[in-house]
Structure formats: C-alpha cells, structure tokens
Amino acid sequence: MKFTIVILGAPYSGETADTACRFAEAVIAQGHNIYRLFFYHDGVHNASSLVTLPQDEIQLPQRWQQLIDQYHLEAVVCIASALRRGVANDIEARRFGKPCGNLLEGFELAGIGELLDAAAHSDRLITFGPSS
Amino acid sequence: MILHTVNKSPYANQCLVDCLTTAATGDTIILIEDGVYGATAGPLFDKSLPQLSELDIKLYVLRPDFEARGLHLGQSVLHFSLVDDHRFVELVLEADKVLSWY
Image (cartoon, rainbow over all chains, first blue to last red; front, side, top):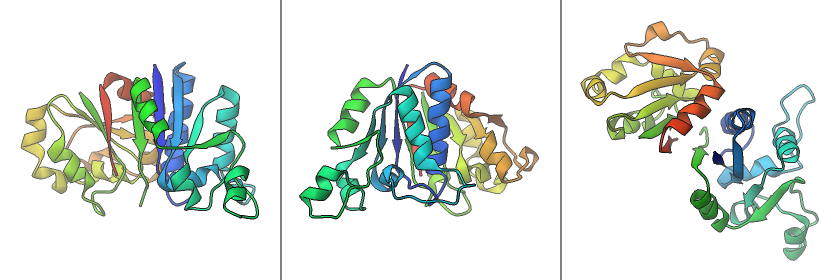
C-alpha cells in the first residue's frame, strides 16, 4: 500500500515530527511504500540544515534525511511555507538575494499541487498536526 | 470507516470533544501525543458515553506516548486498547481514510 505522510509541526516545538517519523519507519518496516512525505506549514523546519542540537539529543532533520536517503523517499517541502519561514534551497536564496540556502539534501521545494497529486495517488494519507 | 487521530489533551483543547461528536458508527479513534490524556478523562466522556456505546466506536491509545507520561488505563471509564506504532499503521490501513484532529 502507498502512504503519504503530511507533517505540519516543527521539530522540537512539539512531538509532531517525532511521531510522524516513527510512523514512517513503521510503514516501511511493514513492507509498505511511502509515496511522498509532504512538509507543510511549520513542518518545513524539519528540512533546515541549520537546526543544531547537543550531540546527545535526537537529531530529527538527520533522522528524516537518513530515512529519505536509505529508502529513496520523495520528500517535498511546500515552497510558500518554506520561504516565509527562512527555509530555501540555493536557487531560491539567490533569487531573493539571501546569503545562502539551507535546505537539507534529499528534500525538494515544490508547490501545493504535489500534495493534491499525493492525495490522488496514495492509498492512505495521514496528517500529523502541530502540537500547539 | 474513518480512523480519527487526536493529539491534544482534552484538559487543554476541544478537539477530542469535537472528534467524539463527529465520529460515526464503526469509526475508530486513536489518541496520540498529549491526546493520550483523553484515556484518563472519565468525567469528560460521560456526556458522550451513551452515544459512544450506541455507535460502536473502537478506542485506541498509542502506547509509547501513553507510557512516556506515566499514565495507567485503570483511570478511564471506557475501554481503550494500547497499541504500538506498527498496530497504528495497521489501523490506518483498516480504515478507509484518516481524519486528524489537532
């Protein structure tokens, strides 16, 4: 079965990202496919390479990245949500005169149409809402 | 059949009550994150209890989130089943769609 997982919460603002990541890992462990991960609203902060934590804490962006890399997942970050929250790839950063991009490798910026496409082509779509 | 997820405590947020008033016969509800406090909120459920038993709604709680808060099922007046992440995935598959309350 094909799943799409929508993540609306920033890492460390609440549990959303952790719950969603655990769910994604469970989906894969059961042999199902993930059609797309869609990071929307504050969820875009999961894709920032500037998130920095003490070494003994869970590194959520890296945990996503490993999952994406290992299972070749498509991880889409809503471009409108991302740019207004300071998450951009190098192309968008240059376009808007910012000093650098910070989108983690493995994630891509795209429009809301990718969420509609995912809803149409997945067997199940589950949204993990923000904690606050 | 719809699987409803609730991630907010009923002591702080209206979404569990909204979920209970919306859920239909045969639906399933799973409490996750702070939503697991709903499994301890007996009095809050009382108003919805007759409706819930009539509607045959199954109630689940995500075990890791529940245990992380040191809660015990004995505090609830309703029957909740504790499930792990894998069972959560199965519940999503058993439902036609998922409705997230947050």
